[in-house]
Amino acid sequence: MLSGSGTLPRFHPEIPWISPVITRAKEFERGNWGAGAAAEAVARTVTATIVGNVIVAVTVLPQN
Image (cartoon, rainbow, N blue to C red; front, side):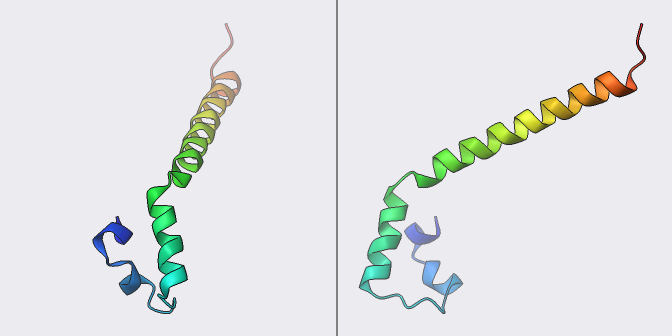
């Protein structure tokens, strides 16, 4: 979003926005490199939540 709106240089003024840097930023913009990482993070979070709930259920709930 930042790259598409043209405001990315405003948020990182210390980066020298020369042609190679702009080209690399556009490659990231066109790619879906973040989709895989986001999916993995969501899967880890869901797994941790399920494991946490199972541990609570086993240790806290009374056994009948």
